[in-house]
Image 1 (tube, rainbow, N blue to C red):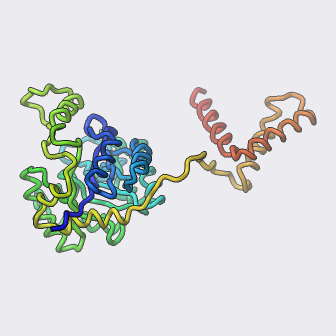
Image 2: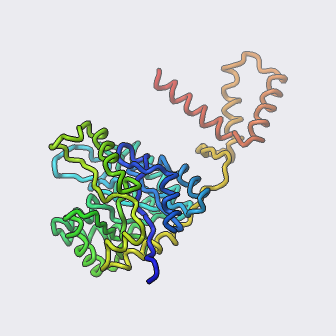
Image 3: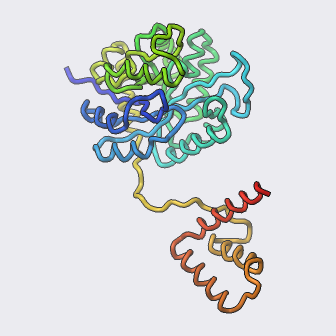
Length: 356
């Protein structure tokens, strides 16, 4: 019998702070040791580990799949009133397929912290719609929106959300995620997800919510969660506990967990094949300064700003002064630093305005 084909697409590293306990190098080595040609990194709400992961995977000859388990606000991210039971921050797994997707995921992560943060860095459906290019979505764990609705038998709402996410991400780029960590709610959810998949045509994908590398790391991970919540190990009242099955299992072990859903295991291979992003060559990557009307290049605008402010700095603008300025501007331009100087100038001006 051939070995089952499976790739882990839902993994939390040490960058899922005080929650994930898998070191990136160990994640990559474990995937390679199990014969997986690829592996994903999907930390909670951030991409802090993306560059180390891309480099480590490249060195190990493993295809890196950059991702993030984002927090999706049930309403809009501008809604920040804490009303019990009214709003949810649903989990949603996003994976990068291309450079466009990588840039979009960076944008989503940044907006989630700068504009959407409310207990968690959040995005909403409108934001996802604006930055969906190059991304694949999976419905997430028990805390995912589709899962949450199916668990209370809100079939119409669950189907509406699943179809909305599928529409946003594009045909064949959204999957219903099923997991089996021995949790009764998960086991009850699997047939519901399968039924929803049959009704909508949205495919299933099997994942393990990996938070630590080996089964014997469970106790250490439980200690980590105690640090996160400020609880003691022997506190019988603590709610957040480590699940003994959220470790990096082999393809054979994953196949044993989903005997009735081989296509959901095969879907991990299908998704990995669609993901084809590698980190570009190192070098200088500077932001583009937004030019006001009437200026074609950053060099033109920088020279304008310099000349406009020159009388404020130098009382007597002689030919020698102008000659020196032209020389300095030429050096900056040859190094392609015009935009950088404008960005710094803008930041300094903003700081001065704040200080009065």
